[in-house]
Image (cartoon, rainbow, N blue to C red; front, side, top):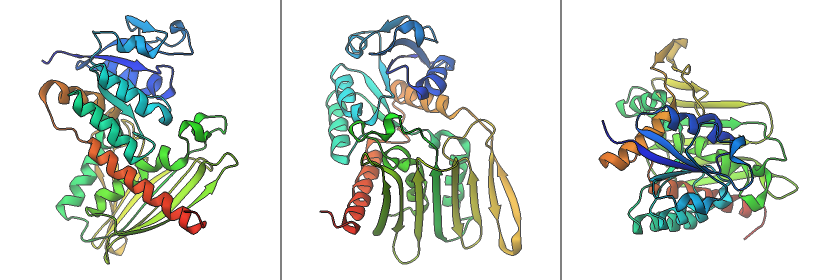
Length: 326
């Protein structure tokens, strides 16, 4: 058995840390929780998993020589600053999605980690559920036939007081939810985006509270997506092939009970492909630990993150063009 990776968490008061990633670290034999830090909350209020080294500042955690890897669930605006500081301190980094505000910023983060010889991975959890892996196998096997169309939608009602509504913190629906919608569409396409169009609904503060678009991949395949901070909770992914249609419910935050891919065939035939459930956050943490201990290849690389952010830049440019911007 490999030596557990010693973890620290910056911004340990965050909801995703408390509900998902801290339990994943605490419950894995591949990891051990060493340190947590918050700059706003006393440790007695958030150190729920009993990290032996609670800190009241992020720099103090980075000075802890026992910490090998750091999870960063801070607002998007702070990802680059603290990822680069982690790299300079010799810490591996699992940074919450979306990795950066722009592709250029993500490239600077990746370069800092490469220079320091530490690993960097975006904490994009969806690929670590067995159902996502089964969908990839359906695509590569050709069982769906020739892929013609795919659509992806994610709406979640987020209170307007949340930092994701604040432009100065890197808020907006595309940055927060876009990775979930677009990554599976890119996987289904298996080729670069050749053309696109996008539009958005903008809040009074200037963020996109809803963002939608169309992506073209040549003459034979197209996709649509929509993400929003308003409206009822909705997650859906549908991939249309010439032989079968694959539909996935709850594709972006799956739990242990989400085990089915619905398959629709000709003449209304319906069947389910069932997989084992898991805790995808624990699987993600253990995958990253294996990359550190065994030099296993990362399933989601910084290059993947940078490519997606370049696509975000193109989508924003499309919106600006439609609105008469530069």
